[in-house]
Image 1: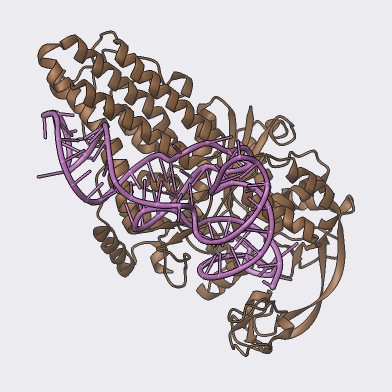
Image 2 (image 1 turned 45 degrees about the vertical axis):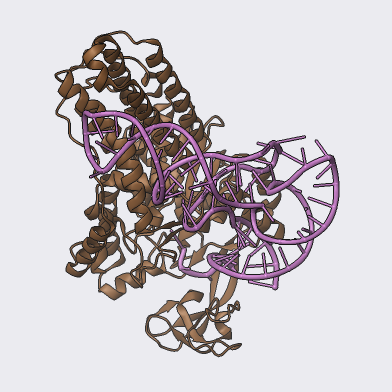
Length: 559
RNA sequence: AGCGGGAUGGGGCAGCCUGGUAGCCCGCCGGGCUCAUAACCCGGAGGUCGGUGGUUCGAAUCCACCUCCCGCUACCA
């Protein structure tokens, strides 16, 4: 089976926070799972770097947008590496392959007759010399008198507005009074595809409930043509005749990155012919890990574009959308500094702690909440005590009572039974992953540790060793091989710790696939035993976080 | 306003699609063990599953209405 696995492209006007990281981690866990299940996988993402917010951020800093995104792309790529994200290609929307691909793609869609032009009136800032997106116009709400209403909506009374409704409109960047200017734009004729999209969504069983209901509601309400172009300088030039000076609207090109990134990957490894084997083969499945705010782009606009190109691209097999992650009960907020940013997280604790907890609370059914209290509890009770301690008690038993060598004995009935039970559970882990229930899967993984602890307790090898060496040998051999199996699953969720554990266990040949997980190995000399995890203290972590911010040691603190 | 999601023992959550005497982690009480990072294991107390009405032999689970909370509304990516 072939898979294209992707996570939403982070918009890199800033360092991503933990909410964004959830999608990235989820996709990584899934990609690792697929590879271990023996499937062919191409796992891609990239930096989304065009559009007005980036232009404005660059203006603020007095550098060019490209200088800004060069710097951010490099920084964020590095962070993903440190989080162990196993991308085959993490690229960017400025990549020549992407730019070229987008232009060609839209020319095709244009030729196929799905794009039309229309003149519109828009607010323009004569001072900054840019057209202002609705959100970048502020003024007084004509309904409630709120003075800081945005051009699209009044944040106080909630009413939807047009920017031209505002009394005393001002440019959100410089405060100048905008003028109305006519401009021509190109539109994608989305409504044409309503029926096909509806059929596609209704026929797609994998879609999470939130994606299905949101998408169908939108289609039933009636889709509208989507504007494709902007008057921005920073972006991919629109390839249509008469569109000089226009760029493609970021969203309408960033989603195409899923295609271009795969293309680029196969060009890089010099197998360009593989591209079509993935993207144009009905047997390939593609899956996108995103937050609920992105649903319409992945279930409606992206599939519609793929259909409109008439190139035979496969439609998404699943759009694994999650709800939101909150921080201490509130939304993450860059301006209010509420939340934890990726680079901060890595200064506080190794990546696997975050990988573990983020998947543990993955908001699959409803918004979930990051709280330091819960974080501390789950890391200490589950990761450290249940899992970490099982590993440590088994290995240190081997170390102290067996001179560090796993016995070369045979397994007795009880030991075999325990491993059978673990194998059953392992099946659940795989099944949950298959169903995109990452949370359940991780919790089942922890259940394996409980099996191990229960077994070790009931067999009491520390007593047995004095009277019944043979039985103890079996206990130890079985426990060791349970751990060995567990490393294979651990590697999906916590790759760094799994690597460490492999070394500590003296395993030359790692169980790289699930099919190899439950083999029995004997007479192995283990390495020096050290605890794999440690407990955390929320007070200390919070203090450390405040310290990082004060000293501005990392990029997200500087902004 | 419209649309969507949520309401389950003290706290945090799963179960609801495919109805059949409520499950997980923490906390609490009692016990076991001492190999292990004061870690591990066993047992127990604690819930009329937001409210009302309906369908059904039977509803946390399906339907209707209601209350409270949250998110989104497509040029903030």
